[in-house]
Every structure is written in structure tokens, then in C-alpha cells.
Length: 75
Image (cartoon, rainbow, N blue to C red; front, top):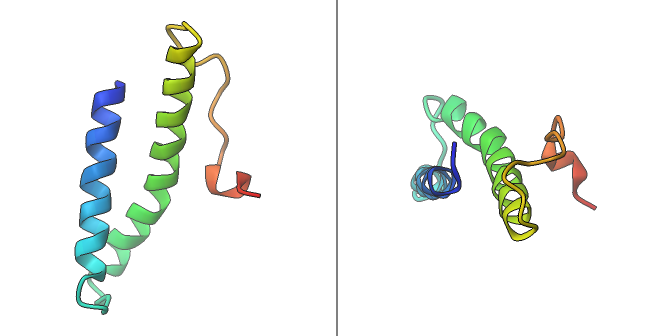
């Protein structure tokens, strides 16, 4: 996945998450999809930041493997 695809996916997932929360209710049918979005968005944001940093450093690839769970890195 290149940077443009990652950004497009992030935007789509964020919009989908907002649509789920729009009516202030999450239905039982929406819970699995919301859980997926909540799990994938931190990974995509991490990948975006790492790709942008590698590009800014003049690298053609990301030299460090991704963390298992980027959300655990906060703080």
C-alpha cells in the first residue's frame, strides 16, 4: 500500500466511523464493523507516519518493523 492509498483508506474509515456514531447509537449489527475500524485506524495512522518519516529521510522503504499494537505506544 502506498502513501496515497493509506491516506484514502484512513479518510474512508474515519468517515465510516463518524457515520456509525452519527445517531449517537451503535446497533448490535454495527459493533463488529466499529471494532474493526477502531483496530485498523491506529495501524494505518502509524504506517502513514512511518512512511512519511522514511520519505522525509530520503529512504525508499521503512527500516523498522511496525509495532504489534501502535495504540499501546501512546504515552
